[in-house]
Length: 200
Length: 200
Figure (cartoon, rainbow over the protein chains, first blue to last red):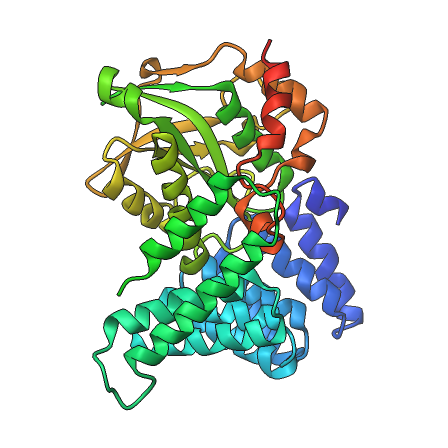
């Protein structure tokens, strides 16, 4: 790691490969090699190596999250979503993964992705009722769907989405108002936001 | 292309944000005085709102942040006139896909908006030179602006240097911090006085 710090990456890599010759299963060293790629700005190589690493060490949550972040940085949202799905399967009670997954689906866009985003934001809000991100996400996703849909569809209809959005907006406002000594300008900014984002 | 003036407050908040998260990419927006632009055609940057340090490329929280900031601007006769980004990698100071995406949004609202790309190698406590390069955004391309059209207010560099040394960035709040805990003020009103004192 000292060589990494000195940016003598070739020497560092040699040292790490030597350690791996003695112990193939040293996951920390594998990850340092990937980190070297990242430090040199070689993101596609880092992604490739990280994928290979995860084929062997499938239960390394930190690695799945890192891969998801790398994909998000490269705007490969579909692949990022896959990584987050693995994390959700392993940790279904963690609201953070649900939230991040919903954000990725929302960014991808399209009705199906928006529906998924809404569902996962709702689940994140259920797992952690204090999560403002989940509430905002739910509000945005439901508003988008309500704006896109015509009334009386087979899936959640326009009215249902409006109800979800309204509920989320109310929750958010209550949380902000409960702060009491908040500056008026911030509450006004929030109200204006909720009104302007309500697309219907 | 209008001239740009940058206040101590905005410069310092930008620098503190980048310093607070040296291991992450960070971004934020810069707000200008609407009247000054209308009357004198000068983009006078008076405020800086740090946005995110986690997953810059995800849409929902960005929409929430920009709507709240827009509403705040409406109330205070300001306009979102700039966007800054500091990349994760110390040697990488070029705009990426996320930069394009966000600048598109901002320029839709204000065509004279500029991009402030932080050069990480200039982030030193000595602060001899402005930490960013400023680019205009036209026809989907970034073009570096003439440095003569840009004025930093007199005490910018010394105030930033002083506050970096005092590690004031620990108290800076960005939008990510606010979403995690809504009692934290994304306008950083608590820092304004501290910055004022250092700009004498």
